[in-house]
Image (tube, rainbow, N blue to C red; front, top):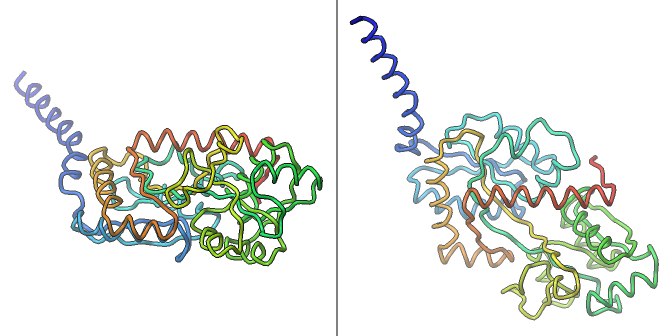
Length: 324
């Protein structure tokens, strides 16, 4: 009887210790540097935002937050690496909308909903509809009328097949009932080059990429794909105001952790993200790239990811967009 009682006590202690382990680890988190795998190469918009928040996170967490760029397959290489990492908060992933789109039209070894825990949507940059100044249009209505007058001759630039820019343009094409010719490029730089020269007539690209050219009148902005008018360009009507209900497209940036990362660790990271994007120096630097801090709660980010996947999956199906 005594032995059974003692065994029961020992067993109970083991269970309690195992259950307390994640909480105990979270209490001391972080006790070593944190690696943030960025799902893009250095110098791009995602990398820019990641580095803006890495510095304040280093200060508030008390440990180095190291940016590790893993470009390739629209961020899929970074996602695969992160999904295989220990769920302890020391390996995180900084991703953008491009990774969600990639997973819709390509087979992957991971699943963003199954294999990751959302931390926060960190920031977002709206998409802007621009045309070359030679195009005789001033509004979305004008653009639609012009496209209908030259059936399947108006072309648009994207940052690659099955990219967010590709899907956003196809969403516009479907809603407007017009045929457009897709010209894919390997990145925003190449796409902008041909937009500026007039070889390509229109595009949906992030506002941070194109607005400097709008200000110098090298490109003409028609509308912005935000729910309400944007602070960066309050004079510019939204796509919704322009007759496209629900037309919202953003190049967002977010932070995720491997599945089963302890909730206290997720909560700590979220709190520090909120502080980071509210810092005046971070706000001003993000604004230079046409980006605003968001800092959504983990559950909000999870719901947002699902809504993004649902929307772009429908567009890909209707437009018959396939992966490479």
